[in-house]
Length: 178
Image 1 (spheres, rainbow, N blue to C red):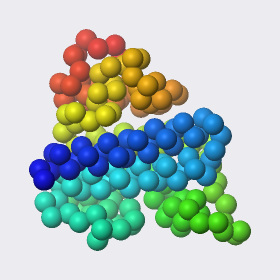
Image 2 (tube, helix red, strand yellow; image 1 turned 180 degrees about the vertical axis):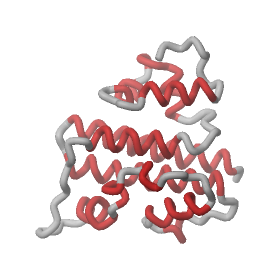
Image 3 (cartoon, helix red, strand yellow; image 1 turned 30 degrees about the vertical axis):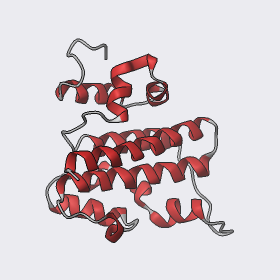
């Protein structure tokens, strides 16, 4: 399968979890929201790896997002490892504690949670210059007519950057309202 197709397939999976995280956050369901945020970031990092690494094997990568970030940084694709908020990469807190019932682990929901996931998602999204036919690109093109877009834009600190990114890729007309 072509790297562009693999990227979009995995980005679409990621975007669905990202939207789910945002919906659950607004419903004040912190633990499921954080699980979906971590899942979205893992899938988006793997999508990015598919785009840049010909023989990428997601099963070999498992759930180790820090190693994915390190590999992308070693290839000079990621310039700043802090482009993804560190708590989102903390597997023991956010991935394990939200999946398994543990008495000793609680999942903190930071006041910056929504901004953190929005900024991290955008930062990884912007690493790949190919966004054609993704659910996200189609939602942004449709604007308020798209239920995905309405979820995406609610209190999203990066919506303007996302639109500008799509304009730069010629996926939106330059006169699109930002």
